[in-house]
Amino acid sequence: LSELPESHPRYLSLRTRHRIEEGVEKGITSKQGLIAEGRGEAFDYLLGERTLPTADDAARAAAAHLLLARHPVISVNGNVAALVPEDVVELAAVVDADVEVNLFNRTDERMQAIVDHLREHGAGEVKGLNGDARIPGLDHKRAVVDADGIGDADVVLVPLEDGDRAEALAAVGKTEIVVDLNPLSRSAQTATVPIVDNIVRALPNITTHARDLAGRPREELEAVVETFDTAGALAEAESAIRGGRLESDAESDPRTNGER
Ligand code: PTJ
Image 1: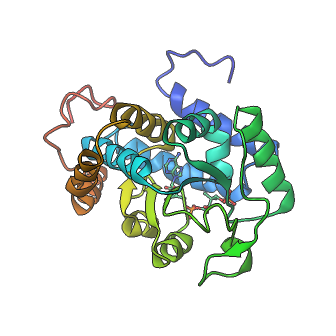
Image 2 (image 1 turned 135 degrees about the horizontal axis):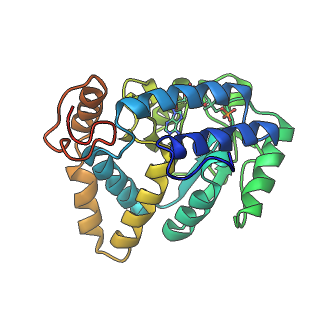
């Protein structure tokens, strides 16, 4: 990848893919993570590899939820750790959230490798290793969380989550913020706030909104949360993927220079 010039039209996408490959080599990302990445790339290509206006609204609503939360937690899996470790650490600092490693394919080795990787990227305490609580309604390993982490959280950011776990977390009453490029996935459909965007754009965007909103009165943050249109955001993302022309679209599509 070092030989790939930054001017290459697929540079960002190839760099992202390379990070996932490295994640697998380091024992951080699972092999299924490679498949998830491929699926994500296809959706992102169809979205024009840019943040839709409604995904930006979702990122702002997510920032408001995290700032209003009693105990916000950012859940990290093998793909998130490989792609955006610095961004996780930065967002956690801005909204004062815990970071917890929570894996679909949980093994002690991967849990430890991801905790170490996050700490190398500046994380303080990283939760997840205790595994002393369970999310009800899931089979054993996928259900394992920390009692004083996700177990106690009121707001959880779960990027690239699988549908079952997203539903189980929602069922125990947690406010769920999901980042998922597939607007039809069960995780996106179940989330209080679905951000249909690539995690590499979405996390820094939430942080930018959180910096802007920090210190504002509670009523103002509550208004951001209440005015977010979940169904509208999902519908706009689906329409963009299916090739529908959006009002906001014409000039910003990198594939077509605006000529769709
Ligand atoms: O590390 P683990 O063991 O916790 O496993 C993590 C994966 C992602 C492998 C696991 O949760 C899984 O199998 O997830 P799924 O069911 O493949 O769902 C992943 C979703 O994330 C899909 O809808 C993808 O389109 C989407 N996705 C993939 N890459 C990105 C993405 N969404 C946002 N940004 C991406 N970069």
